Image (cartoon, rainbow, N blue to C red; front, side):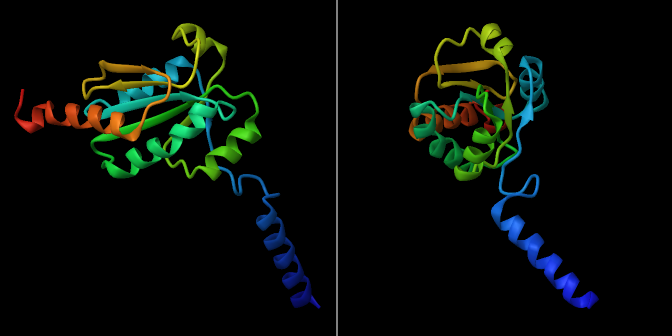
Length: 166
């Protein structure tokens, strides 16, 4: 009788896992954060190009550009590029579902109004590209394409001390 019970419990657990009813399953994790956490991420990744993309799941241009950020993240090696998504979403479950659906594998922070006020964010999406020293290289207001990301990344890679151009 124990064997049957173990099989049934196992089957029930598998069923709930498939439905995503067990905590943490089927959802990309994100971190609750503040502006200083974003600044710390940039500082921690000195030596790399750092791209910070401010978005929301309900923003159509934001949703449209996500595949380009995912492509950039997978195109460049981790020792050259660090990416951070910064969500202003209020709905945690919607954000978790979105991250899973979009296959976002880079870190995502969920921020509050304090972040938007500090960085004067009046519209989204916004993208901040920092050079290898952590200095802001470019800020894009509005949607950005993979080609624009690639152009900025390639420029910064070519002008880095390792490339011999400095």
